Image (cartoon, rainbow, N blue to C red):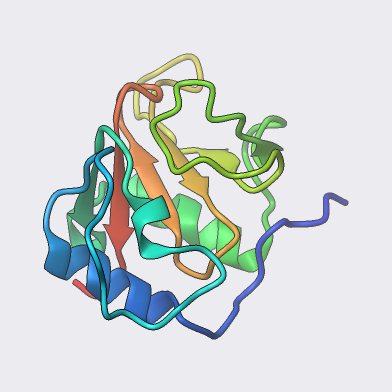
Length: 144
């Protein structure tokens, strides 16, 4: 059985998510001074090119299924699910190898895994959705 890289955690994730939502679209530019509480990773580190946001309620139903499977620890439909995501595109915040993991979002009618994925970070509710096989990402807002 595969050991999942992410478990439920409490901490500053709500404050960080609030900061991200309040700051608007994320960019690769350096952030100015912030009054947000200090965290193990600075808020500016969560700013990356091509990362937008999407409400949990706006995700396709299959993405909800994938997120539910992640929380339950599987079983996953594809052998590759749970594999380390390398962030080769450099679109997500720069983290050490093993920080991100990817999971397939089933595409109805596709004979392959398709292009849709959920990429999780180590922080609780740090989930990114891509519908275009890593060309862009949206941080999932679990509050809407």
